[in-house]
Length: 312
Length: 63
Image (cartoon, rainbow over all chains, first blue to last red; front, side, top):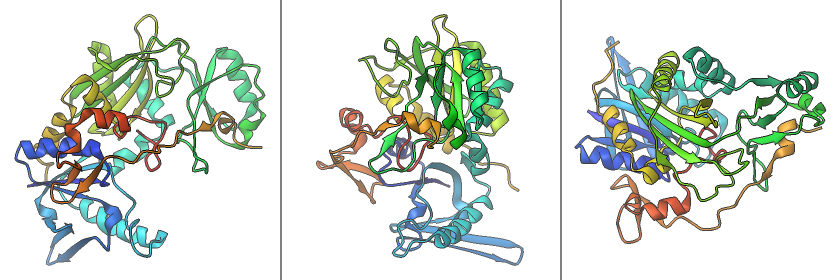
């Protein structure tokens, strides 16, 4: 039985898992949907009450009945590398690929049906509340007055993007930024805006959940540092124990979302309380493993190599 | 009028250096010029930032 890894070639984090699977003697095929239909192929046939199918790429062939598990890591958009790419071709190839994969009994990390809602920050915050995490007061709004009232109520807030930076030339990024309560909020009317009470941080925490296994790393925050991804001050990621109440909440979150993998970000305050910021369903773990030595890739590989889902 | 959050955008750092490894279809992973897997050289991976959490990559925002 084969592990199918949907990702792009340049994804070296996937390489960590490829090496682990090879070490465990587990067959794998690495497949980028962007290569359809020119550099990769597929076929699926429904006949006499059953179906058969296969995927092929770079000289490898895998029967869809031989797929043990599917890891959705960093797949390209279907047919993105085609000689004549188009939205329509992407839709056609996506229908064929994901449709046939949904029809298998393979286990997913993560199933797209679970991943899609889990990408949305407002959904994450609500699930986090249900899971028992400490969640900073947050407002998502298009109303300037609501933003002003929230800023007054919280007195110290940050603004962050819900979906990441826009495509721009030259490229820009959107770090989480503190906002003066006296700021003019009239531009909030020009787009949905996510405002959150500022949590003065002692440290950033990234916690990786693989199935039921947890790996957490802590990095001391610089003085006044708001976004842990920017303005690093020489501190390194170090392994940290996970408090029991966080363990319970993480497992609850994973159960509620149906995710098999999640990368949680927390802000640790001066009292040691971990505040939930977000859970990236496809978040990076490579830098945590490289800096802390925690065997996350091995855990992902073991999960993927585990027993399949029940037959439907 | 532009969306409020965009008032706080900053220029993204451009990566001028190309990564010192290339994908091997045979091995199904990236290899260095000397044939070793790229993941064998942690210093290279950390220096290139290709395994890090960023404020949104070009193709996937949920890093």
